[in-house]
Length: 138
Image (tube, rainbow, N blue to C red):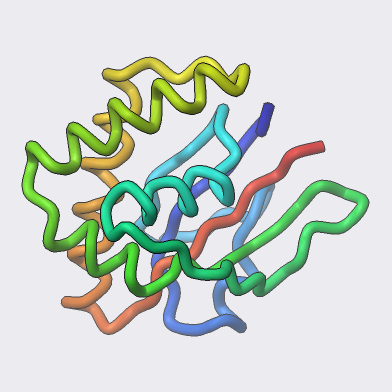
């Protein structure tokens, strides 16, 4: 299980590389502790768009378990455009899939996460920033 992780907004890859565990920052962010966000992002994209984009790793996972990736633009667009009901349905479906795979994700926490991520994705367009995620899975 991932110990810590966070979706965040940054101006570019160079800025995104400087974010991670034990590194304070003032960037808009949504924590995603307790999940594998790389897997979740791919599932969310399929649930919301019907397709899956490859992840672009800014910091590939190494022996230390740390990684940073850019959230695919089709998912960002889907998160911005999805209404409350569609987000809720996708979140609950994802929680069921994750639980079947051995990760304990409650429907309520999955809905909360996707709603907060949708709000973050909406603000990325307004600010001209990109959506990234870092996570640490030792």
